[in-house]
Figure 1 (cartoon, rainbow, N blue to C red):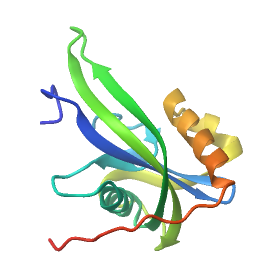
Figure 2 (figure 1 turned 45 degrees about the vertical axis):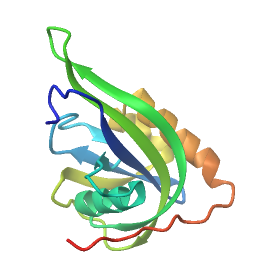
Figure 3 (figure 1 turned 60 degrees about the vertical axis):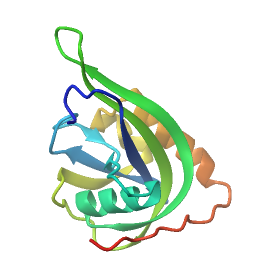
Figure 4 (figure 1 turned 135 degrees about the vertical axis):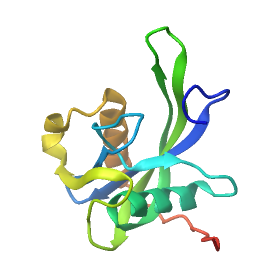
Length: 154
């Protein structure tokens, strides 16, 4: 149960960088419905973090990615008008690079697009997303090796 959970839900986020662009999605579902953010979502039982990131990016954008190093870990909390916790995610964000595919708005997103790093203000991203993107850009300048993704049969 994602609304009013009894404990935080583990989620992943992908900071997919391609030159001076970052991949953004407009959320089709709560939380954040109608808002621009980084691709990502909840980790499913038995799924590794890397597999969850790859799956979420593909479901939202149609792209396959190489998953690199972890960038940040943060809490995403949303409260209802009575002050009760409506959503609580612990998000683990990773630096990613596009590997293959054609960008499209896939099943779990209202829209998906490459955004110029210098034009992020027009997307009204949360401060936390801007911070994670900046950390990923800084991290990208160093060498990294993609993490191994283990696909599991469905």
